[in-house]
Length: 413
Image (cartoon, rainbow, N blue to C red; front, side):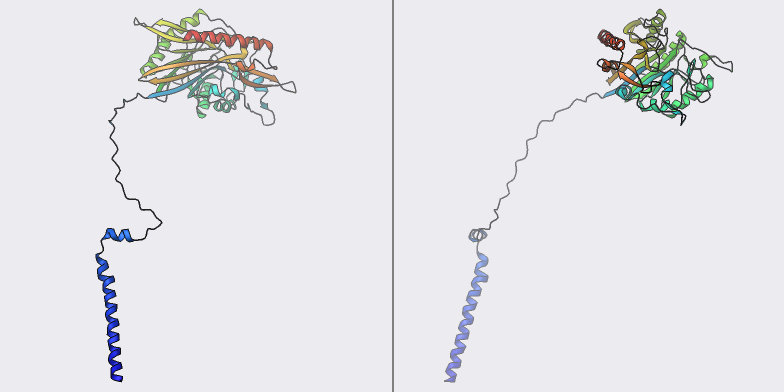
C-alpha cells in the first residue's frame, strides 16, 4: 500500500512541475513576439497625453533689404551772456564780517537753464587777484569766492578783454587767468606771452567752435615794465582782427564767435564805429558777434558783407547784451536788464545749422528787512510781469523789451 502511495505522490509532483513549465513558457517566450503596435494599443492609457512630434515648416526667407547708411548727426549748445562784475551792494550784502568772507548763495538759481550748456561764455569785467584789495569802483577786483558762484552756474569760458583787465596790473592779469583756470574756466581775449594765442578752439561733440574776443576801451593800463598792452590783450584793430580770425579759420572751425568790448557806456544806440568793426569781424570769419561794455541792451540784426574775394558773408551782430550780473543803477531801468543768447547747433554731412534763442533777464534787487542791504537774484524778464515787488517802470520796460526781441528774432529767419 505504501508503495502505491509513493508512486501516486511522485506522479502528482511531476504533473505540477509540468504545468508550471507550460505557464512559464507562455509568459517568457510567446509574449516576446507580440507586435509593438499591438502592445501599445492594449496598454491602459495614462493620464498624461502623448503629443507626437511634428516637424515645423521652415520660415520663408524674406528678400534682403539694403539699408542706406544714414549720415551721423552731432549736436552742441552754446550759452552767451553779457557783463559780469561785482560792485556796490552786490558785494556789501554778501559779506560776512565774522568770517571776513563772501557767500553769494543762489543768485543764479533761476537762470541755470540758460547758463548750463555744452559751452557757456560770459564777459568778466574785473580782475580776480589777491595782489590788491577787493575793489568795486574805479579799479575793479573781485573776491575769490565769486569763483564758486561762476562755476556753479556752469560757465566754462571767460572773456577777459575788457576795460578793467589791467586794474590789477600784469600780476592781476596773471592771477585772474590762473584763478579761473583752477576751477575749470578758460580765458579768451588775453595772453601772457607772444607765443600764446588769445583766441581758442573748443571741440564739442565733433563741432569745432572758435572763440575770439577784442576790446576798444581800456580804462587804465598799469604796466610797470614798459611793455605794450597789445602784447597781452586783443584790441579792436583791423590787422589784429584779421590775424585772430584767420587763425581760427585755419583750425577748421565750424562756427566762430567774436566778443567785442565797444560802444558808449549807458547808451542804447549803436555807433558808426561799432557797425564798422562788426562788418570787419564778419568779413574775416566771425559768424556771431557779441557786443558788451555799454551795460545797456542794444539791437541785434543779420548783416551781409563782402568777404574780400568777390563773395558774400552773412553774420549776426548783437551790438550789446547789456549786464548779466552786477549792481549798477546809473540809468534806469536799462542797467537792470540784459540779453542772453543760446545757440543750438546741429552738424550733419559737415554742414552746420544753428537755431538762435534770445532770453531777456532782469537783475532783481530786493531790500532786506533791516533796510541796509539787498537780496539779489537773476530772473527771466517774462517772469516779472505779474510781480508786485518789482517797480512798474521795470515791468513796462520788460514788456517792451520782450516785444522788441520777438520782432528782431523774426527778421533773423
